[in-house]
Length: 192
Image (tube, rainbow, N blue to C red):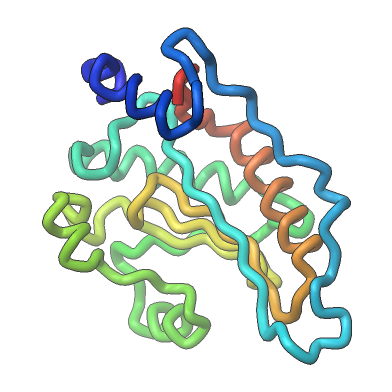
């Protein structure tokens, strides 16, 4: 959409970002110094849990409302095989929504991991076509790292745990995003 409508978007982008000109390029990803974050509640008095998440689109695919059923399946296959190759702290299991047993479904609901078919806004945007085809959930063995496949974004990458250790949660997310992108290219645009 940006390429087609750049003449419309550029003045809005420049105004919103305070002088980001039509010729300017988006800077490369910068996660900052991940060691600057620590435990925001070391005594455990105030923070029950901490979650940091981001969404990513995969290179070569449209946004979800424009995907074909075959593309949903392709993405799920690529994501599943990529994630099942993770090791260390990120090692886990991928659960496709299609064909999921009631027992697995209930366990994921009980763990508050299972996403549901989109709300009325996602449905109106056509982002729930072919439900549940091409959708899935991955979590690591410790259940502190999750990836939702084709929920709203191609990937929703989540790091979470009990307590207030924002540093550990953020470092896990950064590590996971970098590992996934080494194996599965994300979509990027120089202007966005």
